[in-house]
Length: 474
Image (tube, rainbow, N blue to C red):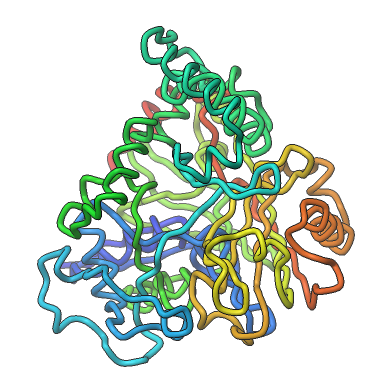
């Protein structure tokens, strides 16, 4: 039997996983086309002077056994403590194999690089130059930081939202129904605008369903009670909202490590880098080929039997050789948010003194910090040391930060010269007392286009696009 060819556009997690699954079949030749010069999409890891920087680190945890098992067959779980676990006197208590009902012999107890580490999830909000739990919880720390007056106001506001539900026409309605108006104004309204560049009152409630899902005050309070009474069972983790999970897995050498491991196992022709698809050729109800352009502007035609696309829908529809004006108009109205991340290497952080968690060399253990302050444009900050100590060249003496900015290509932030933008990012963190500029050792900038698809613009007409693509049989 002649082999069939599957053309997969995009070498991010979705495209690579599709290729990996198809590689388990012997009768398919797999061709993956990636526009960039590296794999991983917005889950890639970039090496900058021996300090690895993830383009938005990702927590490896899923309620799907199939997904968890796939990750662990690529990178087994390291049951031995990581070097930061030893320094911080931290125990490993997430038994990935018990959770999945797999034999623990699959674990990797050795200190090798090809493995997953257990990470203790700690993500907080930095607001009013103080730390708040994320998701927000009504504990002593929150009461102390906000003050009794604001707490009482938040409580009554939440009770009002319980008994007087809004018609959920917008994201603002969605959030107020779950958190009350006062907490919405304090923690959500300005931050949402910072991230998306659109007021929550102008964003459909669909966004909340997709991005926030099951999180609410009730679930946050229940999770807090379970902590107080030490109700903890790995077998119950599937019943916890993903945003509330306290432990997760992470590749030892950065999130891009697992996608490289996956790419190495793809059979057939494998991954072709620097191949930007710009034309999709069709005949009747089938796609026959795609055309890609490399970095030297050479054009290559890729014919196939099956086609999978993970490229932005907007670009995909524009690439079709035949499409109606209506479909094209909807596709062009789909909105994306672009993204910039400033990598900043420092000796130490000022906020270490503002944390009850400060430990080894006054470090804080947060993986992510949401920067809520209205006076700065930065939206979120990663501390890469706490994702994996093995991606930092000098883990014990430096802190490696990733400061995230959400923007639109061509706007004021995107158009800055790289050095000017990096100076701007350092000054912002200095302004809210996160660091001092004299402690900065090095910095770099990475830009990512179309990082986040938005649930506004013409998204409410997306069915038009879906109906168009659904008519192609292959």
